[in-house]
Length: 148
Image (cartoon, rainbow, N blue to C red):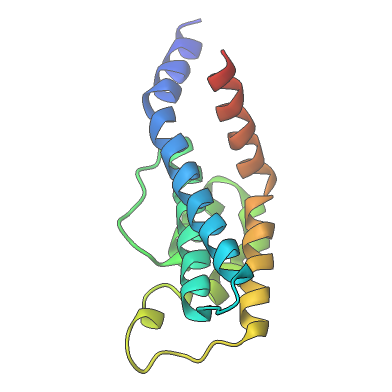
């Protein structure tokens, strides 16, 4: 009985942060999709927002598992931390590596060129990441707690 109490205490201690990471990630991804539907597409910004959303989904998962996320934008590193907790995150290792290039350098001069194909790929990639079973269960748990 005591062990259950400790687990619940940890759980409720960070659920607010978990929820905040999820909301911010969803907002970044929603913004990327809105920009993608615009007549004038700012493709670099869309890719950047998709990388940002991925970073926050990974930090959401880490926070949920009582790991304080490192202050980094490195998606490969964050995903490696997630893999240490759950091997299912191996399924998005390649995607994190691809999205990683859009995290910072894309916001400065001499950035990489982005085309429509890249934009479509990053949108699909974040959809895949968002649908990882572990993230879906966290989302469902947040919704359930809000209804209580």
